[in-house]
Length: 212
Ligand code: URA
Image (cartoon, rainbow, N blue to C red; front, side, top):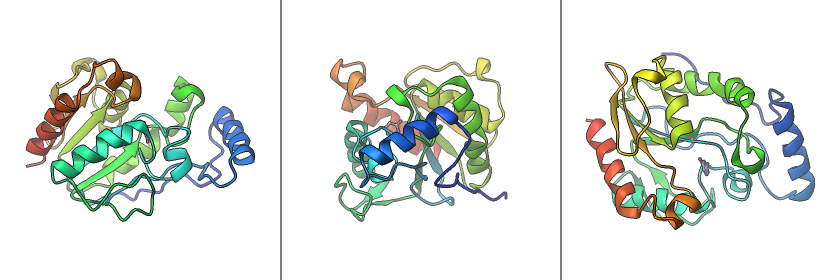
């Protein structure tokens, strides 16, 4: 098993993201404003892969999806499906615990307008690859959105063209790991009805089945 080392607090790899981080540190000094480390143990069987921290959510609180609109649906669903215990209170110190699952982002620093560039995705890629390799019990990945899907497949070392993204798709990506796809649980997708709470609950249930 390999070792996973997260990016340093002042990770210098992406000049545009460093500039954005410095501006946010000046503007919002009480916020986390650094790479957001994953939440949950490396011994988990399920890894949930998001896009990148939201400006006022994970970038502010320091925990993936925490304080984001997207986090309300994600954490409520994890609690309902037995993948978390405690209370989700939109803060990193709310005491919420994940059960056999871990949440991470394909890109670990907040990008302007929620959009990492291809160069930023590439620079951050080794962190997800190392993380996946450092999870000895990993059986399932829940990809939150097409970006997370692509980066998860790359981290697993398989061809993206063999496993096209589709909401609800179940990809036997490797002998050990199944990737389950969901539309991103973003405000846009839930407000427009592209993703409902029921649809999201169903893909989380699928991911639980694939952990077995
Ligand atoms: N917050 C995250 O941490 N990741 C996302 O993909 C969206 C919101």
